[in-house]
Image (cartoon, rainbow, N blue to C red):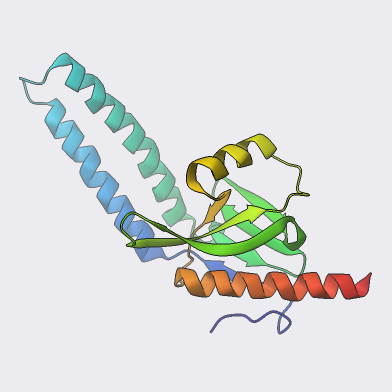
Length: 173
């Protein structure tokens, strides 16, 4: 059951632990694969560089996903009348509803992976250069996890919360 705007003061959505575990297993397998490849005696020097680079990057990714699994209550999306907060073990970012143009679904690959994305409004002043580069490269400014929901359902829910609370803010002023 999705938390409808106006029925509650806040709602918290958590990340799907099974999805995180799947990614963690994939990255561990790749990490071990690179390590085993590196042990081969006939690996070229240039290939050794890429192996070590892969091992280092995957090590950081494994730590990241491991932290997300070990601290599941730190990875959430909090919806409030003022806006939403995205939290991970490494920090939190809060955005006001009025700073967001709207939420939409972006499809990557051959349509197999969908995620919720959003753009900030023109009046939002932070990170203008980074946002402009991101929008130029991928078509949107910020992605969100789907928090165990279908991307379409989450985008619809976030848009409903945004529209409801922007409307109530306007009527209060």
